[in-house]
Length: 253
Ligand code: NAP
Image (cartoon, rainbow, N blue to C red; front, side, top):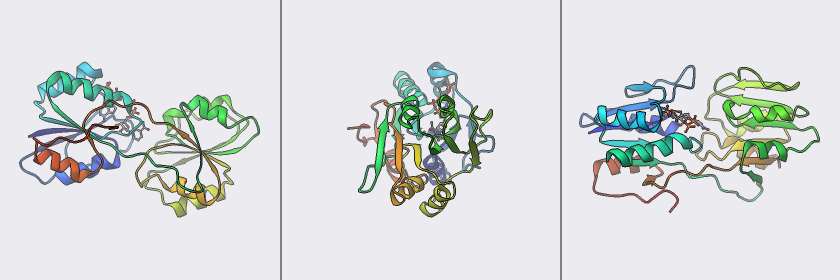
């Protein structure tokens, strides 16, 4: 069976690792090609966009892919929509490996917003010290609020930097622990965190640290994703591949 994993996440890498040793499967992992130094992967990798939904359809046909696993990040809505369309058009089986979102617990002060522009507005006009953990592609709108001090963490450098007078840049790749993120927030005297609701453990440190420090968190709501069969763990993907007649629950249902 030929399998294409759409990746760029910790889970996609873990899934590739779980399937790598099997001689009944030919597994390829697809990366968008965004990070300058991607981590080594346990299976062959292809990199870069397919050229929209038509390009992905062509790839699935030409490579004779039997099963497509969408293990992309929950905010990667375009590639997930393309995967759903291309799988339907080609008859390739599709399964999404989806991280459940974090849920609010006691002590959390979350403000959920629908867009980055709303997150900027939610900061208000009184200068604040803001931890921006959104990913470097999303932060441009904060240029319209130069009165704040920004601590920006991303995997690759932010280039060009934000045109604001006070910004500090950190490049780091998760996982990030609560202890380390708490120390970071304290060291920079952060008073508000802006983040995506990524789910999973690797980036939860800042959320847990904000709770302990009684800091508000402005959380960007997740984008709508296509209703396709979805599971939450690598083991469930393996079981689905091994028992093709079984079906998983539809995402969001
Ligand atoms: P996106 O907006 O859904 O995708 C934009 C375009 O990038 C897609 O149309 C596709 O180009 C290409 N692409 C995305 N993922 C791809 C993959 N795995 N393999 C080949 N092409 C891919 O996604 P994004 O938000 O830019 O995210 C890009 C990648 O980074 C994803 O793999 C995602 O898992 C990972 N990531 C995203 C976030 C996030 O917050 N968005 C966080 C961590 C990791 P074509 O249309 O040309 O095929």
